[in-house]
Image 1: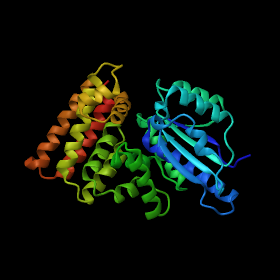
Image 2: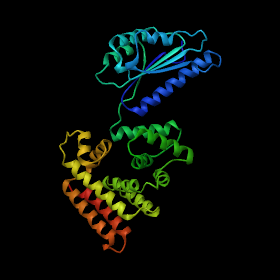
Image 3: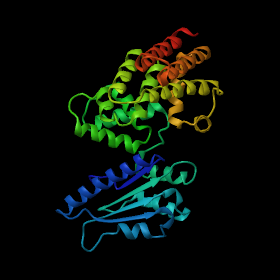
Image 4: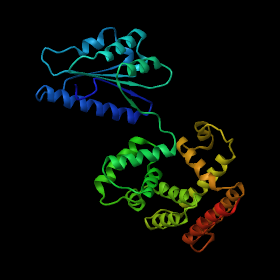
Length: 328
């Protein structure tokens, strides 16, 4: 039995996860083929688009070579193969060639759906890479990335990294790798904040998220850290205002509104809409209005109407948390 799946089907639209799955499958097949060939380079590699695959080509590319070493074929966007080619692929998967590995990517969805079913029935190894659109899904992804690199990170670190980086999985994975290589010990929110202190706006939005979620101690800790590392107070009031306004705008939308459509309307990414909906669970519209007024007052004081911008910001954060709790 081969030490690698002879046929692997990677299904989904999450580009980073698809690319990673292909790389891992390729590395596994190459290592096994190299071992079988006694140290060769791991087989000939052929990569092509599904729409370009022609009749008989899959069998030709996987046929044993006179020089040995095996072969690896990567077919991108297999949903675009012609109907007769799809039948060939399914037939091949049921009886794959020895010393060969075929890796296919498929976007999922309706187009080419029968091919996914047929390849699965034929015994292909299936790797699912669905689009991650919810905050909880991206949070789980970051947790898994820390486990992948063998590092412990608390929930504050996971939240702080999402605040600093955003929703791009490639950037998040790269950030986890950097943190793992550049820091020691358990990773917490302070470590992430220190590492990404140059992202002033992200630091302000982290303060805002903690405040609207009612986490007073964390919000004040982030505030003090942001000010200590040079974040301008006006950026923090701007972030607080944005956070509270988004609560109001998302809260006023119909309950079943599509996240993508709502994101375009309010000017926020879809993953952020899911997080705001979670934040809204502790709020009443009256509380949102009062919180917005508190931020406006802090903004005026920060811009010259008060003696201490730090005091004004701390007072605004305490008021936001209080309005979340008291306005029912």
